Image (cartoon, rainbow, N blue to C red; front, side, top):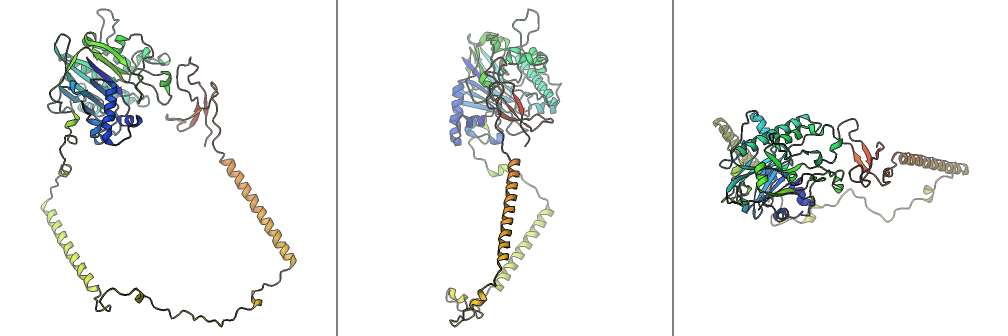
Length: 515
């Protein structure tokens, strides 16, 4: 049996920290190994790893019993990225980064690119620059003993932000490139599995709120999936796509089968999500070899849950790993890197060398002159006194000649000089009254000032209660661009769920007072 699992892990390093693995790097390998063992698959495909090559560590990349392959984003750090971990018993014969072939390593590519004339070189480079696709090619043995080729395409498809129309174009072009490459591999005789986060809920049954979305089935991503996937209920002679959604093949009417939930609204608690993670296989492969297709919603640690499938085939491991394997990266290959590897030889022209030599000789002459000047100004032992040893500290102190002599015959001042003249009773009373008046005025000013600041700095108002459950609300901030960007508001603190569920969030909304 061959078991494949896909999981959008939403940051592999943050996932390890969230799972309680905030330990030294020598424990990271065991932590990743526990995750892979928990998924219990021959091929584990991870999406949204959010690591780049400069932060990839050996304990994270090289796990005992597995060989790993990474694709990194070349534009942004901590963004996108996919990784594939294969058990040694399922070592691929070839591995390739990207879909276009521009990132293929020597002697490690698998060819079969199809007709990509509709793309420019710049466009192909841009589509492969975000680390969204990784291909591994395996040898498998079927039940009848025949050996065949299976290509696993691990993808993290782009998300179409409604506020950025260019990202929808990018997403659709990525879909098109993926389909061209997958169909080219099929035509070359290889079986193909496309698995990962496709970022599109295909059917209304795959989305919790499809009935309230305008033109749900007219969305470009869903139309593309209609052309890629075959409808098992199609009549003979109608168009049938080359691939099958393996989960719907085994569970065609299963409702609530979601793989992604909003963490902001706590929607996972009430299973208020969508199914955007898939295991797609070519028609022959799914119908002949797939034994089951499943979701693992009980596995926590991300806003997605793992998905997978089991095939009734046996993997035939390659004798050695492909060149793309992370253990062959120079930083992990076990050979010490010399500092000269990171330096660039700079060729200097003769005029520059001559001027540098002149400057060096002038600097040396100036240093000699400075040393001679210091020696000439330094006092000699014969000029400073006896040179028999260190001088006594008391020799640096001298009695002061300007200090007055103390005398015991000084006369004390007369008592009359210390007495103040008599003050009339009226003046005393006036001064007391004036002091009380000033103190009262100062006290009044202080009280007025205190009341002013108390009225201005009243502190936060008590948290309002939602109208549906009479429970304390939660404070949120508007992040959508527009006139209300940055404003605060209160809403029900319960998780998002179906409107018919009384335990889900109510529609309470209240703007917070301006600060």
